[in-house]
Image (cartoon, rainbow, N blue to C red):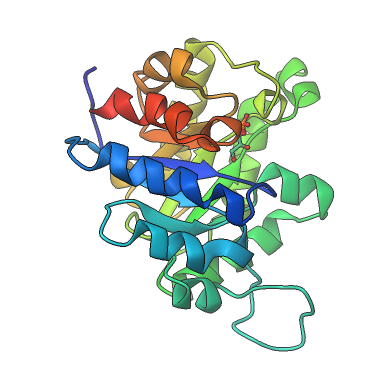
Length: 252
Ligand code: 13P
């Protein structure tokens, strides 16, 4: 596969899955990747409560640790929340913010997502900022408009390519087995890249734009080979090492 642009990232978002019994999967993945020459970075984002355990399992491997969400504050009276600094202390190098499940289930706005991304940057973490349209928005021909609005609202000004990763995740493709056509992915990613240049102070060409939504071994090569796609944010297929490896190997 021809790979252009910034070094790709394949990140696994475990969502609310995986207790201690799941630790065997990253252990297995680390062993499977040991002697594989990869042209991408690999990351797993487990539930925060087992982040440290996962980090210790990954010791000595190139697989990085990420968080799934953070609060915008560094500390304080925020019951049940976790700060970017805490994730950093647990060994994370990145945190996902603005996932559509947070936007939908927790009413998170672009403004809040932007504050969380700022918090990630403050802690020295990469912010993996998620964007994506709903099915109704796509049907109404509003996809690019929605992406523009989310980019303007969710990406803090002054963000750098090093600490910012964009994940395009069409809401209707998440966990459904449905994926956009490669033409639709190419259109969305080209639009995001163009908007990054115009709207925020990012080095657009150097910023990684991941695709997420029903990525699996059987469609990864096609999706990852689409122009302006610099990796994947994977949900369900990241839970089993063998499945996740099938996606990562696109970059071997
Ligand atoms: P699935 O890969 O399960 O569709 O989930 C995608 C996702 O939401 C990753 O953040």
